[in-house]
Image (tube, rainbow, N blue to C red; front, side, top):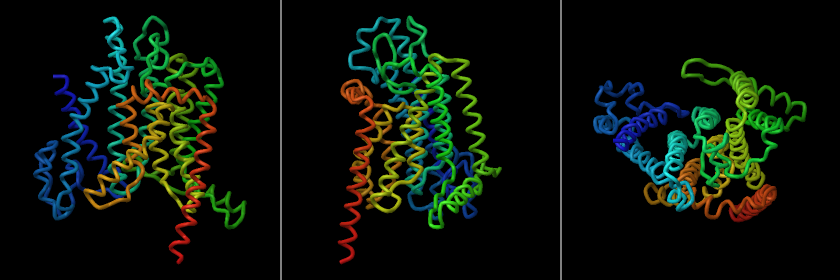
Length: 427
């Protein structure tokens, strides 16, 4: 009955995913049965809104939306439920995120508490995968990732970390989090799987958290730095870009982007301080872990975007990938975000190959690769972290130097590629 309930919830979530894919896109389309029907189509009926089966009736709109437009959304609704049920079995029942054999030696009481802990993380992962599904298919369709997914998802991740830390079972000590358990277990979600240093409980931790959140808000602003007419004009253009553009809020009301971002920044800054001063302890460490994940997750993609542009002389990656990776880092923590980033090229090979075989298209956006890397990181966390990945962090601060060196090397290789390409096509 538990698995059946999860499957049914997943099917309903699949219907929500389809609605969001076609409603939150830059160019909304009247494909979801919960959207207003196209003017050329017959009015929607209640049977059209039955998940999975309703798409057989909506095949009547093939002349409007395409011959097999209904197949993808039907498969999303059909498969998302079993996927969530399988994830529940792996994370909660099998404790698949923990080191191999860890569950075998646990006392019964400890086993029950650990499953409760994994249930909390499973719910967070289910939400993350829902958001990743929406972002992935919008990116497939339009090569954009809407802020409605990534900004909302990041704020949810920060909030859920605090709630989850307050709900985490206590095991013989006032602080029991995935990164600091008596058994030395490390799992992904609401985590920074490493010993906690006391300095993060001091005002230094608060300053770091507030700075990361402010930088994230600023990164979402409409920024234009144009030096063609001098430094003073560049500042004027930059300021004008910040205050000029509007955004749609809740589908009806328009507001200036900067007003919305200032509201988010002020509200979030107050909330961060409230968690630090009011709750402290595990709630603060969980929130700070999420904030560091946001900073490093988005920061590494932003750095790649900047260095790739320097090498190629043109944009190589959209900013939606930056906000998507910030959201992933917020959910999974900064260590996991590093592994997601390095897994993305390998998932890209599989996705591009499948797309080429099925559609003949070899050019796909980067967002789906990051989403696939995030899913693999969650499912195979034992192998990624507990078996070999944790050794990477023995390097400590040198990790940053290694990443910087890799970025410089990438920039040089892309510049060389650009020169060779220009020479070839110039002849």
